[in-house]
Amino acid sequence: MATALQEFLITLKEKLNIVDVASGYITLERRGGSYWACCPFHHEKTPSFSINEADQFYHCFGCGESGDIIKFVREMENVEFMDAVKLLAERAGLEVPQTGFDSQKTVELKRMRDTLLKIMNDCAHFYLNNLKSGKADEHIAYILKRNIPSNIVRTFGLGASLNFYDLPKFLLSKGYSRQDIIDSGTVNEANGRLSDAQGGRLIFPVINNMGEVIAFGGRVLQKTDFAKYKNTKETLIFNKSKTLYNINLLKKLKKTQTIKEVIMVEGYMDTISLYQAGFKNVVASMGTSLTQEQARLIKRYTNNVLISYDGDGAGQKANLRGLDILKNEGLNVKVVPLPEGLDPDDVIKKLGNEGYQKCLDNAMPLIDYKLSVLERGFDLKDTESKRRYLSEAVKLIRTADSAVEQEDLLKSLSAKTGISYEALMLD
Image (spheres, rainbow, N blue to C red):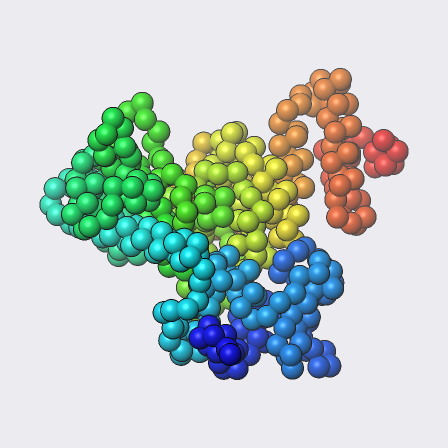
């Protein structure tokens, strides 16, 4: 006898077509009785990902991944089984039954996750109300100083922590347990006392691609020995390496237009500044080294990434390994050159939208960027240093994707150094 879950899943799959659902994530091409695409689960240039519409399943002949419509959504959205079911049920206009679905362990995990999400949602409203309370003068002053208009404040849900102790009192008054609010990462415990983990800071809610608040970033408003920015700790619902700031608004943007490219910046204010200036295709890595999970998250929206980190030496040299991770996931990576000492927010303020657009227009392919970084480490006027540079540069050029690209880069290197193309070929 079929369980309530089995009966519901049968109905759900009957109402939906995997081709329709998958086409919202990847570009499909019909060949005969199947649909084909480059696999979203591994890097490939020749399509080997196939969808069998008749039997409603997918299979990749390259990496071996296969499954049904629920598994596809689960993998693409990076969510648990029941969350994928809920997404599909919403699309199909069905109401998910509340009982008979999960084991005891799964039920407890779901309870914990649901509780943490409720806590985060309540915290977001608490911080927002603080900002509007008339008591957040410092926070408002900072917002005005950064020229953030009220509509952008609302769009990003900015808020205020006024002190260290109001938040835990508020959450306890809502009926949450002491342990649950600690587990949420919003509250710290020391010597038996609870305190707001973001006490006194301007608050930036971190929202996932499901539209759920999963963490908070905070910025100090006065000079202090503490970190200028910090995130709440990682929890059951927040893993920084799998998250990108503003991914929720990028997802909304994709529903209205094709996203040609995504701009990747480092932090909250850069994201907000670019979004406000009309560059809405922006996300931030929140200071973490780029990861494979983040690369795959970006790939759901576009194959092209523009890295727009700070214009100082450290910012421009940072995360070369991370950029390789993006490239290895099949993303076309370019690096945006910014004026020395400026971050994207500075460029917008000093040079305006057109100035920043010129920076984007001058974005260089990853291997060209690596060569420019390499060059900074050598003195080309010194013979020995120049020879070491040439040796390292040629090694790097040989990692280029094609013979045509290698030839073009070697010719550029020849023109820069005065060493003949033929000699570089022999190196």
